Image (cartoon, rainbow, N blue to C red; front, side, top):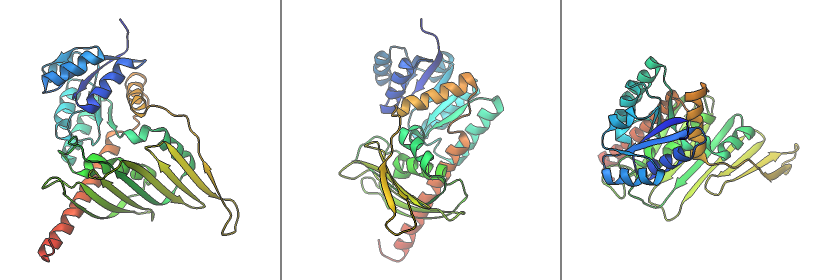
Length: 320
C-alpha cells in the first residue's frame, strides 16, 4: 500500500472531485476518501478516485491525516473547524469563509493547535503568477477582467466571492500596502439578491490602483490582467497561459520592446496541493495563509458593501 499524507476531501462537487483525483495521484499523498451530504455524489467521486465514501464528516476526519474543504462557501467554517479541533491540518478552498468572524475563528483554532491552515486561492499557484512576480515589483495600476458564461455552480454567493476574489487576492498579493478606498458597482441579473456582474476600483496607500471586473453572465470566458509599473507594462492571459511584457529600452518615446515571457508550465491545483503537503510534512511556510485569505475576504465584503450603498442611493433617488 502506497504511503503518504492521507488526505480526506469534504465536498464532491466539481472542485471536490478534482481534489480527490489529485490526492490519489500525488507523489506524497494518499486519497483517504470523500464526504458530501449527497451520498450518491460522494460515492461516485470516491469510486473514481479509488477510496471510500463517508456518510459522516467525523468519520472522514478520523480516517485521514489532513482535510481538504472543497464544499460550498457557507459550509467552509463548520467543516474546517471540525477538522482543526480534531487536530487535522486544513486546506480550504477560496474564499476562506462566508464571514470575517468565521475566518477569525478558523485562524484562531489553527493557531491554538499549531496546525497548517492554507487557503486555496488557485491563481497564486499558477505558472503565470510566478512569472509575473519575476517581472513586476511595484505596480502602479492593475486592470483585471474575469468573465464567464452562466453556470449554476457558485451562485450561492455573489460574483465577488465566486469569481472576483481570484483577482482581488492577486491584486492584494501584488500590492501589500493598506487598501484605503473602494468604489464599486454591480447588479444581480440571474438571481434577485447576489450580484452576477460587478466592477471595483481599489486604491492602496502607496498610490497603486486596481480596477477589477467580474461577470458570470457573459457570452465567453476571459481571464486577463494588465499591470503597469515604472518603465514596463505586462499583459497576462490566465486562460491561454500567455504573458507579454513591454519594457522601456531607452529615453525616447518609442524606445520600448515587447517580448513574450516563457515559464515552466505546471498544474495549478496540483501545485496548490503539493504546497499544502509540504507545509504539513516538512514545515514549509504556508503559501497562502489564513491572514491572506482573510484580507481577500475582507476586501470582497467591502466591495459588496460599496455596491449595496450605490444601489441604495439610486433607489432613494428613484432611479431604480
